[in-house]
Image 1 (cartoon, one colour):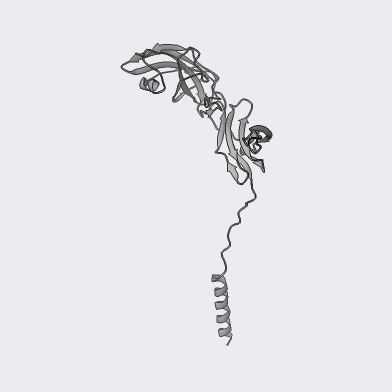
Image 2 (tube, rainbow, N blue to C red):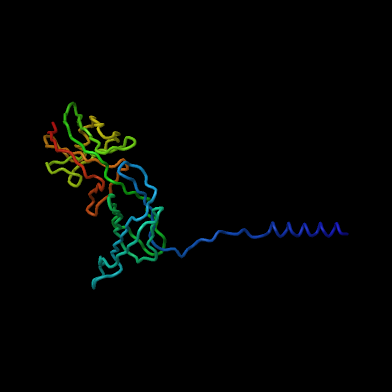
Length: 264
């Protein structure tokens, strides 16, 4: 009899266990806002340990207001400020609806700007992970230009200006324009070359070869004068689109001299 009682009790436990409803994970549906993360890289392209102290400022353009004809009015009516934590995380919580221009910056690091991010208050918006980097300690000289058989031969020398425990890298951007005022801001076409490694007193000379068809595709025509300048960027190169649909290169401080040639 005792054995029968134990058997029935065991069966009851199994029945209850097998028919217990599965516990579903709870989801926090109350989180509303814009959030993201940032990494910091020093002038040698190495990731920092502490990502705190980055300033994030968001300027909201409210589109909810309308004029007497029903047209949407763009009014800057909200400014939000926060800073990143040690892990680079930041958050604007329960912020108003509208278009946001988000400025991300820290002293000695290049700035990054996100233009016209739309937020509608019904969700949490995750901004893609970003990074800020410092300007690399190096200088660049544009040595020569040569055109042959539809190819551009552009020679340059990078001078590394700071001693470090290992060789560090820079990235070269080549800017082309129809005027001698070519720059990282003023250009028709930009071309990024690979990284160059060196250290103090270790100059690096190199010649890139690129098709002249790249310039024609960018809008240059036969017999145009083409002006060229080089800008140095961090190994963790970065650029963002300006509101006027031009690119900003926040890490480029050192630029080369300008040389020119004619398209045959």
